[in-house]
Each structure stands twice: as structure tokens, then as C-alpha cells.
Amino acid sequence: MENLDSDSISLRPVYNLIELELEEYEDNELVLDTVHDLMQFFEQANCTCRYAHNKKHIRSCYEKVGFKRFFERHFQVRALDKSELELFLKAQLMAFEITNDKLEIHKKINYRYSYNHSFPLCKPTFLKLYRINEYFLSAMQEHLQNQGITERIHGNTGHVPKIKSKVFLDSSVTFPIKLFLERYGAINGLPSPMRHKSESEPFIYLPTGCTYVSVYNDFKKHFYSENDQNEKIISYFTFRRLWQETIPHLKFQSPASDLCEVCETFKAKLLVAKSNKDEYDQIKVQYDQHYEAANRERQHYNNNINESVKNSNQRSNTLADISQIINNSAKGNTAIAYNNGLGWTWNDFSLLFQDHFRNFPNIKQYYHFRFNNSPNDIGKVYASKESGGVEVSFQLLYNHNFNAYTTLKTIRIKPMTKERKCYLYKNIRQHVDDPYKDIYCANPEETKQ
Image (cartoon, rainbow, N blue to C red):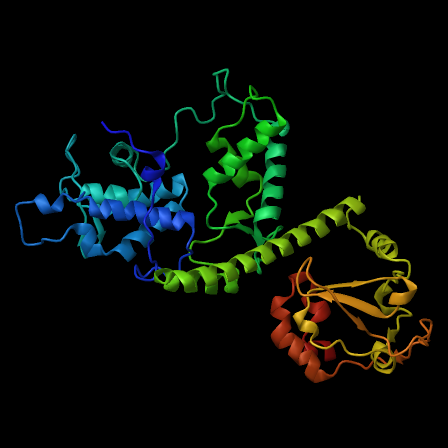
């Protein structure tokens, strides 16, 4: 047999996701590899329906389903964990049963597989759709008939492993894994813009190209870089279980989403321009520049977080902790406690700025600002549009005769109007935690009584 070069085996054609009606999916390795795998399945005539005696339907069952629907179901199944997949398959198998005599012992049960009520499937296509093999399907059918829809539990579950190669789980094993995942999420993930108020941690989403397997492989590289090659390492399944137990808020970004609209726009343009090499290369250069700039911003953000953690060896658990952090942040900063408003005054800084400072033009175009305390830079701000980018300076002060110790005018506090109280009660109260609803957004009618 002729030996084939490994590069020729892994060579993948270029697929246009727009032509496949999959434009809402990211053009990444996971999506393209899945498309290629399903394309090969479609082209290799794996359907056994065509060999039936009834020649009425000349198309294969997966051709009737259509590539888009087949891909979407296949991709959704990929996101299920093992227990979810087994429960879903059992529900499907119960609907596929075609025997009428369920009371007869040892009665063989047959199944009529389908995508839905409109599209029947042959067995090979059904196996491909749900990413399982025939042995796994048989095991699920047998467990369904013997145990019903209860969860399938391995016989060794709960037993102490007797094999010497097993790794026993204690804090020395679980803590490094949790620490690795936290750092991995900080470097590669993006925080969710929203989270439920009952959640203790905001969700961190890894890119769609990441999988449990790819992260585990990175963990193995990290593990052996810090330990001897003969050191025992936990298995993939244990790694995944500890992940879900210790840091459940680290998740994978859904396949059809993208937190960056600019990236999404560039990817759509690249898909359309694949037939025009010059246009494609031009867009690719712009996309790479944006991607590199985004990575610099991410690194800048992570560096600031690490610097803050390094310079602050305490947690902000009390008002005294917060006061100390403010006092140490700069020489001119002094923390003043509110103390329920006793002796509190509101200073009018707007008049101070209006009389002595200029407005920074086009300030929304800049994202990085810094000040310098050298005599030549008093009242001057340096700004850049990106991390490490070209800085521009702007003189904020009208002149150097500004007295930093000028006494500020105070703002008189007016009682809250009834209209404002009604607004808070009707529109804001629902977003306030229960213990504080009557403190900040009380019913003005009840308060009046």
C-alpha cells in the first residue's frame, strides 16, 4: 500500500459557511473540522436506506434532512455532557420503539430511527448524527429495557481504586488544577457582560475553538513543565469532573456567538472574499491588526490585575480595608467615610473644572490615560487609543496659576420629590435585593402613613 504524507491526509478543503447557510457560526477550527467530517460522511454514501427494496426515494436520508439541520443537531449534541447525552438518547429510543407487545419476556425490540417525525433515518446516519458508535447505542438500549430512564452508573463508582497507577484526589491535586483553570480563564477567556445576581462568580467564556480536550492537553504540558516526566497525572475524565466542581463559572462560548462585533464583521467579509485573493489578503491584514490590538488590550488588562494583586496583600472585606487601599493609592487621596450622612457634604467640582480646566476633545476615541507628576507635566494628560499605542498630550489646565487647595463650594441637599420616590418604587425596586428594597425604594404611600 502506498504511504501517504501526513500533511496530505490532514489537508482540508476550503468551505464557504455562507453557501452552507452557516454564516452565524465562527470560522474556527472546531466548526470547519466538523463541517469537513460531515461532508465526508455525506459524500461516502453511508446511508443504507437506498438499498431497500422500495426504490421510491432515491435520495439518502441525510440528504432529505439537509446539511444545515444535520450540522446544527450534530453540533448541539457536542455540547452535551455524558449524562445529558444518555438521558436524551433514552428519550429518543422510547419514541423510536415499534414493538406492540412489551409484556412478552425476551421479546426483541426494534427501533425506527428518525431526525423528527418527517425525516426517518437509517442506523448509520443516526449514529453519525449523535456522535456515538453501535456498541454505545446497544448498551443504552439494554439499559433502557432493564433499568428504565434511570441514570447509568458505572460499577466502580464510589469504590476506592485498587490500581497502583490511579491518582488519589486530595487538596494537593485539586488546588493546582483550580489555580491552572483560573489563570487559563484570565488569559484566554472573556467575562460575561451579565450574570444572575445569585451567582457568586461572573461567567468566564473561553473561545469556541477551545474544548475540554484542548484545555486538558494544555494542562498536561503545564503539569510536566513543573514536574518530573514520571509523575502521575490525573485522567481527562477526572480533570473534567474537577473543573465542573471547583470552577463551574468557567464555560465555553456558544458556537454561534461572538463577544466582539468587529471580529464577527471581519470574519463575514473574509467568507465573502475567499474567491478574490487580493481582497481576501487585504481584509486578512486588517483583521490581524485588530486581533493583535485586542490581544495587547487583554494583556494590558491582565498585567494591571496582576499588579494590583501583587501590590495589595489583603482582601477588601471591611470599610477599613477599602479606606486603607484608597489612602495608599496616591499621596493626595484620603478616604472619608460616609457614616450614614452625618456631617457629610457634597462638593461642587463642576465649577472648579469650568473655571480652570479645558474639555478634552474627542475623549471617547481614547482608552488609555496617564498623568505625570513632573513639574513640566502639571495639568497635562497623556492619552492613547490602544495599549502601547502612540500617545498624544493635552494641556487640561488653562494656566499654572491654579491653586489646588482652593476651597470648594458645597451643594445643598434637597429632599427627594414624591415623583422621584414613585419612579424608584415602580422601576428600580424590582432590581434591588430583598433586604434593601424598603431602604432605597420604599413605597411612598406607605412611608407617608
